[in-house]
Length: 160
Image 1 (cartoon, rainbow, N blue to C red):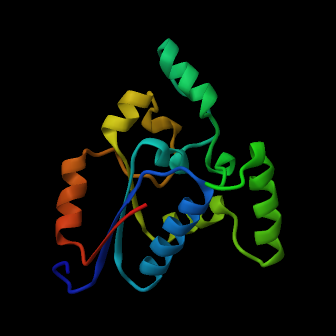
Image 2: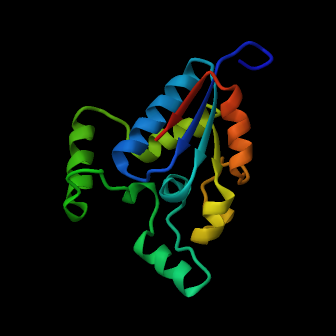
């Protein structure tokens, strides 16, 4: 609990898969809507959730990674039944039929609700993803020590 007595949630988002990102943002948005202080720490493949649809990378390997794993949150495939992008389309249609928000809309709602989203500085450096490639509303990058301090005092800690 923080100084004002409100509850808090600290979440590591390591996966960039559609279903896991849906889960992460549903939980984060629900917690924020309940008045909780929410910290999301995006690392490695989870960084896709914060990216604009831009290419990244400076070195040969960084550019190759940016090309192979390029795109933004709308390019996230489900962890099962991807079928070369067909699964993403199919799940998108099924969710639309049930009035489920799109993943990028859930992320935008998290920004509106004041969810604190941080990119992992080390992952960003290794993957050559600069802060400028992130959407508006993402905090400056931090290290694992910052996240661990948040998690240490959080009422709920999750790893997705």
